[in-house]
Image 1 (cartoon, helix red, strand yellow):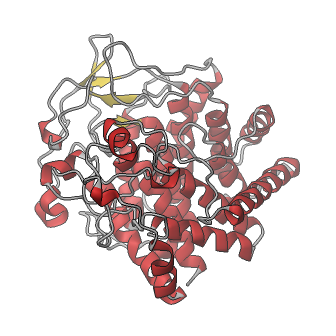
Image 2: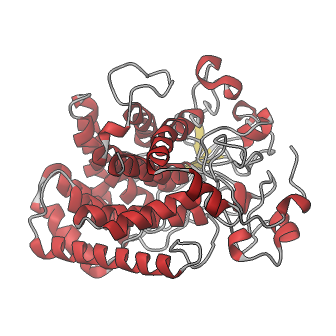
Image 3: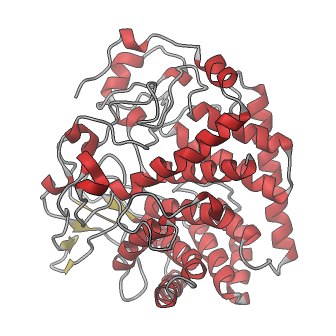
Length: 472
């Protein structure tokens, strides 16, 4: 794989006027709607444990991968945990970020079902079910395999180390390990299973009941468990997704179970967790925002007027702060630091704006949300469309093993974007001294700026679906 050169990294400031002047509102909305399918298909192309055929996957087809039983780390027990989605540029499967991805997609479908067709060109297309729900079910089926009999949920299944960057999925044949239960994984699992149950009720009642039962069992485990953070054992270098605080996951689970069951027990728990530590973010390490979204916009009205009022007022206050930062920024966006995964942070804040617009419709919220999405699509200092395969400015060399193996970028993937911390050697070598918003390099070697992830694509799907509905 080639890496871009220093010459190709010269600053480019034409993105702003090219994007905003050449596209009418109608053209922009058409583009927004048309992106949902390629961005959504990324999840199919990330499927693990099954063969992807050439008819659906093209050059990214491969035999079934990672089908061997995985050893429970530190024991002689082996589990069958095939399935799910490869998390990012590697082939690990991690419960915590997987649940963020599932939550984003389920919220997107619930808010804008008309944005999702049955035509994503995946094996399930044409079955009468929106393909986003078919795809989410594929992940849910794997998540169910990660639950122990006592309700606890294992944190991840990976090898001990990453394979070569050009390895195809079926070529990672090192031993697989299932790593210990964490309460963050268990809480997230409980929440998304409870979210899924009502949505699948009319599609497959047996599956919906299975999801709800698994959710309740996970919540019972949490009820009797102290916090169990996860840290990689010695010798293991795959993603850690460590989270020392599980209050937000417990809150999210209680909110989702209240919405699924209507039981006052879960509402009381949600209120207690909210008061103990309010959070409004949508990152894998802080899932409180999902609890807020589920409670405020779920299928049943929250019977605790005080809780609903606090959630609503906090949501609106946060959205106003996002708008204020955006209006002061030369780039028109709200993030003030470009951290690893900055594009996700920007889209998470866009999600807040869109939810706030649901609570209190506001042209200010909608305009800021559009500006944030435009940044992703090319209205940024580098003039880069941060989604692979969309136009000539899209990344061509993502840090993504299937793309490296195929020698072409898998289409529809959102890359991480500028990282002022320069966390990899390529970034340090070629980007030192650049302005923060330009600390991005289209290189397979730059995992801190040019990797991809399912939980980055998922929030992009949410924003695309919501904006296509608002601007229709």
